[in-house]
Image (cartoon, rainbow, N blue to C red; front, top):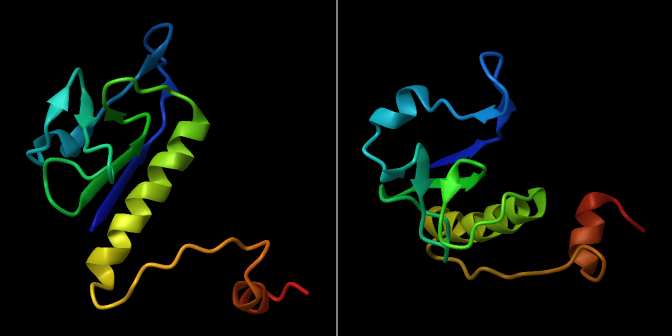
Length: 108
């Protein structure tokens, strides 16, 4: 499984931001304007088990905000869990209210 997270960096050749995919552009992913198209349910690309979140992914209504990247990563992680643990149920819990998570983190 691969998670692609690429943030835009200022280009030294011009004003603005530039994405250079390098070898990723040869992986057979659906690209649109040098961005990777994703399924917005789980941010999986056109190639199974490859996920893209952050500035590198593209979908209708995309907002290039760091908050959007956190949302995208959470949904991708949920799908990745099913690939890694297809025999287990995904349980969503909050660190503020889950006693077992607090114990694992050493929070009292």
